[in-house]
Length: 346
Image (cartoon, rainbow, N blue to C red):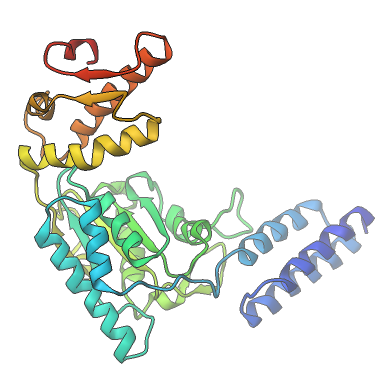
């Protein structure tokens, strides 16, 4: 046996002892380590340690018993939603009603399991689907993770691959759970209508399992090869439309239609939310940049009608960058952008 491998074996055993993983998984992992020890004793390869070491690292760092406490004070939830989103009163009302069901289940049934259809936010690009999902997580006091379904090329990207396979890895769900370090986060299943057609059927099959409280308590990732309880995860999905989403998946979702914004709403959102956020991120203040009120209507439609605010946000980002450049290159320290000088910034 390679004596250099002994410390590695002992480290793996120690890592297991210092975790809160389920007892039967602990026993299973310990047996794997012992098999590696015996294999090395009789001339096994270093790759055996590498495979088991990666596996132990994953199971030891999953939040088997770690979660956040929900804020189910709906008045506080509404306050946060109002702070983050202008208007959208009907959408906020739908969300508050949805969270009311979760609150009552927890209070009267004594269950942490979410037994309500997951929300599906449907709307055109830029109508605030992703930011609204983030706000729900913030309002509840939960961790947040986003999984872009447009980037999944195979069901294995979602479900994971066996640890013995080449380039094995857990799937996107387990990766998200480890990343946030909580077993009850809000997970955004983003752009369900953009799944690769070649793998759509298999991925949708996994989605049915994820969204079903009767099944997701025993979710098995192929790499972890052991059930992980997802019944306390609040899944929220998004799509531009529902045409490409199978009925079996839609049956487990509650559709919330995101409205398009009027020009007046876009201007208010830009003034109250987008501009202050981008200025703060750039380290600028109102002494550095101001936008003349008369200019907003022109900024709102630079290339025609847009249902959301993404184009407007990009326009404001451009203004911020131009101002930052002028300040850093010594051209001035404060700018009021108006119709007369707009061409200097766009």
